[in-house]
Image (cartoon, rainbow, N blue to C red):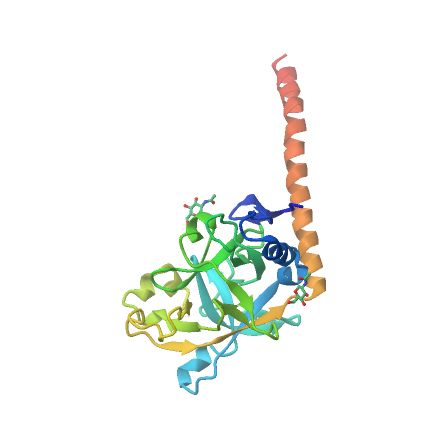
Length: 271
Ligand SMILES: *[C@@H]1O[C@H](CO)[C@@H](O)[C@H](O)[C@H]1NC(C)=O
Ligand SMILES: *[C@@H]1O[C@H](CO)[C@@H](O)[C@H](O)[C@H]1NC(C)=O
């Protein structure tokens, strides 16, 4: 039985077909379908960063949180507000506010990927609640966020969690690295440099310490801890999203119905 999942991705509602083809065999197919329908994989989480290095600079990434901004994924310090981890602005009052990664696992829709890969999505804004794919640039190994078109030629999976489900894995291991972009000449003048965003997330795809890609920048191995959003938060978020949808729908209906009335008023004025 085929089921289709509607998702708001990159500004459009995307239908993700869960049944992907007959070539892969029934048991595999079954596993994929169960996986795709597994609500546990779709529980939303934030990502908290930790770093074991004794280097003084490592303090800048240890106890951090991932935020998505400028098509990139950054590590900034965090604090706790109302029991929730929230980013601390590296420079005063960043607008629009920094948006913490808030996402979940879902199969990446691409018929050319066989077997299909488990992707990772995150909201990139609250209103509208747009989802982006988190992917690794195939040339630089930098983590990025973008729509399907932007991500499809890059590394989009297989995203996973560690055995105890406490941390994020990609391609079977935790090869995540924080890279200091502030050492790149001209950083101050980039949109992210102006906001003090220095530590970017990379993936050490070849397990060689980003050899040939480091370009003299400081790097730290980091752990991406999953911090599940409470059921209460998830419910609240869903309700808010629904409310917004309703307001928008009503708004449209209203303009639809008031237009003739306005015409009538104009016609009456002309008399
Ligand atoms: C969903 O995932 C959880 C966590 O890995 C697992 O314990 C559970 O068995 C899965 N359920 C299904 C239906 O695959
Ligand atoms: C997808 O992202 C690209 C840039 O990465 C943009 O040019 C394109 O308009 C986006 N497509 C949609 C449907 O939003």
